[in-house]
Image 1 (cartoon, rainbow, N blue to C red):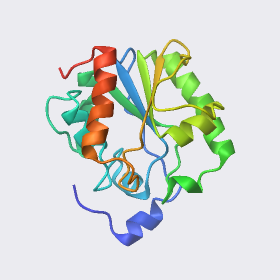
Image 2: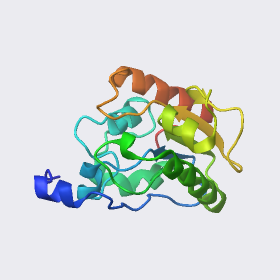
Image 3: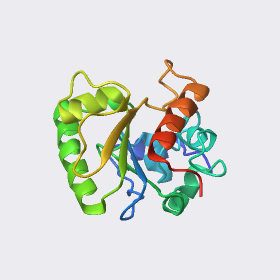
Amino acid sequence: MPRPTRAELAAAKDQTIPDVIAPGLDIVFCGINPSLYAAATGHHFARPGNRFWPALHLSGLTPRLLRPDEQDLLPDFGLGVTNLVARATARADELTDDELAEGGIRLRKLVAEHVPHILAVVGVTAYRTAFGEPKAVLGEQPEPLESARVWVLPNPSGLNAHYQLPDFATKFAELRTATHTHAR
């Protein structure tokens, strides 16, 4: 996958990328919003250094390491991906609390329409704001969203220095174990 140029990254500001989703998936992962890199390439979690794809594989959710440009294979493994906020930014902290809350409303509609078993939000701070849960912690949440169980995972961005790849793999594996989902 070729790296976007500076001009392509600048042009990606406020662009969107489509969800990768289908009805009845085991797990739909929800990012905060696309990075400029993701929007420029059209692929979720595409920025080099993002630990999403390696964590999926190391946790046993996919049988091999997928590349971001293989995101359309996710439904074959019972997985999907979306974002709380659709517009791309250089950093997630450019989003407003109102945008995150609106994203929570959009996500509720998406879950009602597609009925995944689990919604896994990657980013506890964004989850807290989007759903008005200021004390939410990582792991399974006490309340479902529509009919979906909800999990909160750490944000796999390379900017999140609190977790390393083995930590993400462990958290994703806990989700896999709790949902009885294994690589297909």
